[in-house]
Length: 491
Ligand code: NAP
Image (cartoon, rainbow, N blue to C red; front, side, top):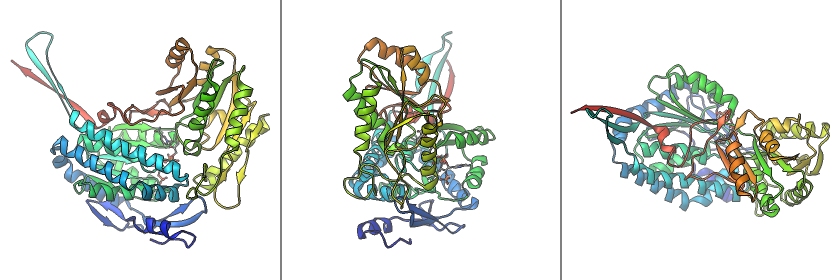
């Protein structure tokens, strides 16, 4: 692996410890298309090169997954669960190195990376426990003449495509339930952040996962290589986390083989603050909902919709907290906000802010890029944001908080639902009746009441509308990887 000279010896050592080939059938191989570079977003410098797979390489990965599907499905559920449990323990033991690796490839501060490593590992612990709870049912048919038996069986070989913003957790959220259910896997991490997934492949091998159950393919020819796998009749399931735009293409492509599909797509989360809210708690929640992952999260609060009686106070307090955050290279101590992932993201966030300012918004803090090197953007709060600004309609994916106001509960819910997306909504209120009414009225797959974070391995994560379909985590997560077979028995 080639590395830059600007890295510390520990950073270089952590990078050097990662295998960078294609992981196929338990072996590391070079890519037929050479290598593809990985950058550090805080400097723009190349920190690693990983294998660049061709269509044939990816087909070899699928062949490896197909070859062991039957034997893997026949393993004891306890054995599958214990492999996941060992992988959970190994990830936890190595969380410091894994966090540094993630920060180097993705940019987020070390404390955010540590949080993601813990979250990612928890999916393995959760699904190690779910592996032994796969069950069917036995019942008497209404006419009494036959018996009805249902059994759940693994869907079969799966393809996982994951995004750069959570390089490990978006993988473990799929790999955990698939392994627990007895499915085999080809995973393609994002080209910008492949290293965490490659490190995970090594850990899964150490944890005892048999060869061929998990295969990792990195490629810069993404559309072509994934397109060929999706067409392949040996594949049974596609699970994708990423943008709505790409997700729609994949849904169309997956129709050819009628694949089972799960789509975890973009969001435009509203964050409602009612007049009766505990404002201290609401500002704490807002910081979490906005700044987890520096705003580069599908769950990030995208629109702050605040009752007119508390909007000035809330905006001022939020601006004070956002303005006090320290921006810098994520590997350094005391950093709250790292760089955005790349230059186009930095430019896009700047354009969204400029559009809002042009349409009359007031900047309370931040408002522009920070420094010359890397892709930094200042934590920003805007008030008096006009309804027709792009900020309110598009996924911001950066540390920018636009504040608008409402005057009645009906208006709050109408504004919250005024988006094509439907992943998550947050609101703060102390009134129980209002809380239940508003929660029922929100068109989202998830709702956070008086809390700014909903992600939890024990809960079903997922959206409605253009945020996709399918659920990851919770008791529901494993169902995405199981087919139900019904057996009728005559007496
Ligand atoms: P993206 O551009 O859609 O990319 C996601 C993945 O899809 C990457 O691995 C990418 O590969 C791959 N890809 C791109 N074009 C493809 C094609 N034509 N065929 C097959 N695969 C293709 O999204 P992103 O920018 O990485 O991630 C940010 C988006 O993910 C945001 O919209 C965010 O809301 C969403 N997200 C959703 C959730 C959720 O759970 N709902 C969680 C996290 C993120 P390359 O890297 O090689 O381009």
